[in-house]
Length: 132
Image 1: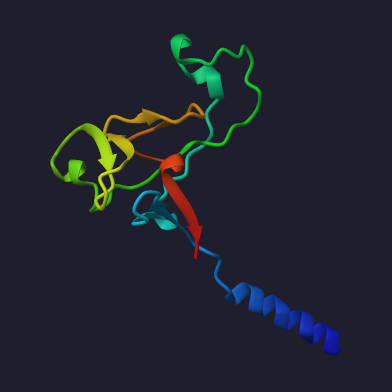
Image 2: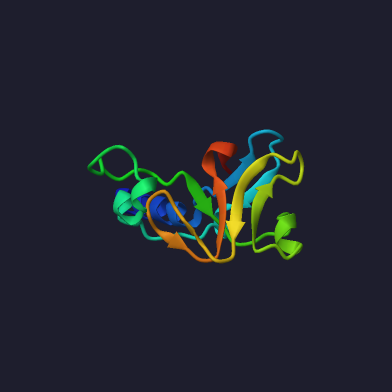
């Protein structure tokens, strides 16, 4: 009986604990640029088949599922070029002016092959992923 109550308590404790959220920080100045809630998920594309012939890698076959090298987010207040009314431009960190990605209201293609419209793309290589 005590074991069953203990198991029930452990189950309720695990449900009440929130999952660790993820924040993305600029690698150069460590300013927060995005949070997990603002990320727009997308379905994986068909890889190299989705790209024009000239944009494909030298590999003849897709070697498997590669992880997306960027995240796509909703437009945010720190994105100055968006507020200026540009249709497409680079996204720079508001703190250090480091280039973090780009945006295009007409859409962009992820490296997995999926099209995202409109696209606000932040490169993972220019940000640190931090769990809180």
